[in-house]
Amino acid sequence: MATTHALAGVVLGTAVWALVPEAGMLPVLAAALGGLFPDFDLYAGHRKTLHFPVYFSALAVPAVAVAALNPTTTTLAVALFLAAAALHSASDVLGGGLELKPWLGTSERAVYDHWNGRWLAPKRLIRYDGAPEDLALTLAFAVPPVLAFDGLAETLVIAAVAVSGVYVLLRKPMVAVAETAVAAIPDHVVDYVPERFVRDLR
Ligand SMILES: [Zn+2]
Image (cartoon, rainbow, N blue to C red; front, top):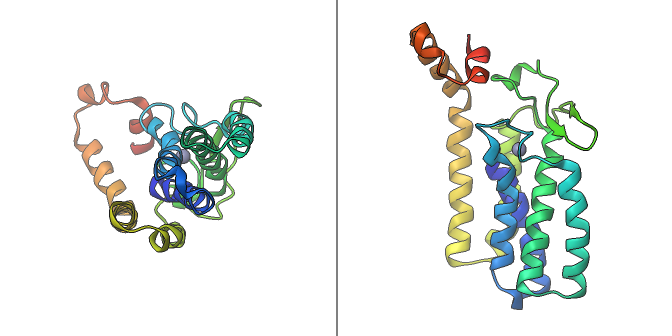
């Protein structure tokens, strides 16, 4: 889920902060945003429009090299944003597929590889986003920043864990509610709902 990806970025950011604390918290924030960023395509070509497993990685390598040679707040922030976005895009392949009920494991689409022009198949190590094992991963990723930081940063990490817990509880009921809602919409209105949602729901 998005919070797991964000906290994976924060773990990277925390490691860098431990090495270069004088760079401040901006690189850690950039890492969190980079971990979150690909999922902003949720409503438009999810796991394709902003997910670039190859390109983010290709950009992250020189950015990390620049930051390693010249570690400033800016170079570290850029490198961490790209590295966290690359990690997110690449690690989506370890989860479930793109279908409405990913716990059924019927979709062969995990994330789009623009470089090779094809969908990568889900490995389902985490069965689906919002699975209990996804929450376990979120909790594990929360440990380093909670130990390292106080104040606002620590509060935000704990809030992300709380949001994750609620999402995991609602993950399956949400789909049932959406199915009921779409079934209740008259046909002439359904024409205006994006095809992707309706196709999976009917
Ligand atoms: Zn994603």
